[in-house]
Amino acid sequence: MKLYHGTSGERLKAILERGVEPRGERMGNFGHTLESCPDAVYLTDTYPLYFAVGSIRQTDPKPWIAAVVEIDTGRLDRNLLNADEDVLEQLGRGRDGLPATWEMARRTEHYRDLLKTMRFDWQGSLLDMGTCCHLGTIPVGAITRVATVDVLLNPYVAHAAMQAQVSLPNFAYCSREYRALTRWIFGDDDESDLPPTHDLGGGYIHQEYRWPPAPHREGIRVWAPGEGP
Image 1: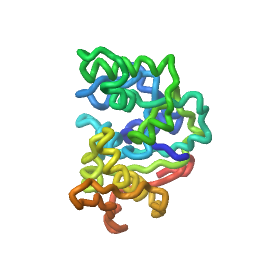
Image 2: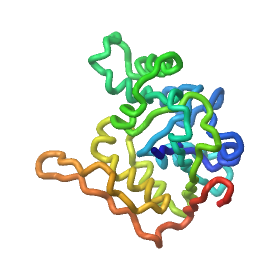
Image 3: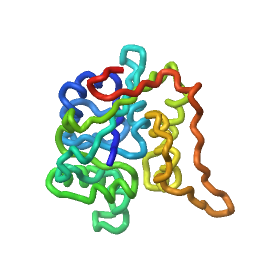
Image 4: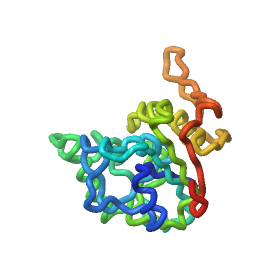
């Protein structure tokens, strides 16, 4: 199975030398939300460009590069894979027995802290919201490809990626679009195993999104480790 990690191009050199490391004491990329688990690397099969574009800071030197790292889970220790605490929090609302007075942040913090000592169904986490995590560094040997997008040369792709809202409802209705976007970035055209479109009721069918053809690929590069961009 191929999963993806979205990051800033500023971190690519370190990733290709040492692997994808947990953030540790570094500040998270999404300051408006609860900090992620410092010991985990977050993976997705749906939203890597959203996380990649979101990791670019205004203070980063230009060009602003969003990077998506492709990872082969067959090269990982599956015992280190775990669910995403956001998935656990959203699935558990109203049924997990946590105090009703706890707000979302407190609930998410609870599940985030459990990741260090408990194993949850990481594959179920992917099926429910397209995200999971890996405890500890992902080795360089598990990286199969890298795709980068210069968001100043291709603002269309950056805008499309940032329309996502990583949540259970967004995944249910829009996962095909964002998975197709990831494949388009890497130049993969086969969409035969993507989930079907969804009937949202009232006769409205959520259609597959057709990403633009080759002339709109300005600023996109794809390569394998060792080849260079």
